[in-house]
Image (tube, rainbow, N blue to C red; front, side):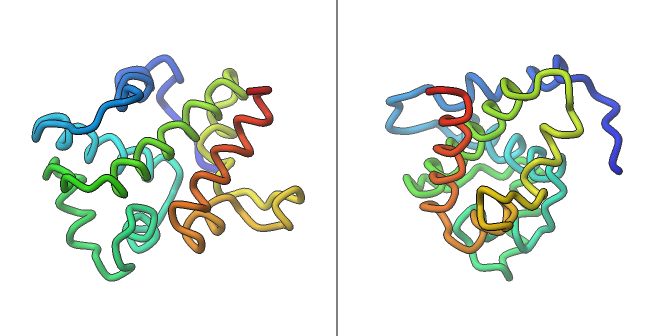
Length: 148
């Protein structure tokens, strides 16, 4: 089992809760650069391989070089689809942190766990296979668990 040396409080430094304020239509280059680093760091915590990272961002699985550039801070493109994906991924992370505040292993491991409610698929399998609709569905599932 993977161990996490950081506490959830340190996670606040990612700025996930403030990363994508509701209703914003665009982000400047510096903000998109910060979002790129944050989402790739989230993927690392979730244990997502580079090919699946590309798929989650709406790129082809072979776009590993783009993901590597994002990891280094290259700004995300000005794409509504991509920003929606990133915002929903951060929403998933936020929900997990609220649902399991004292269990970082579950917060970061949950996306890779088989889930009977999801027909024994992992949330990551659903998100990668279905793209943005799958990401939105997983976020909605977690929102439902939170009672929203």
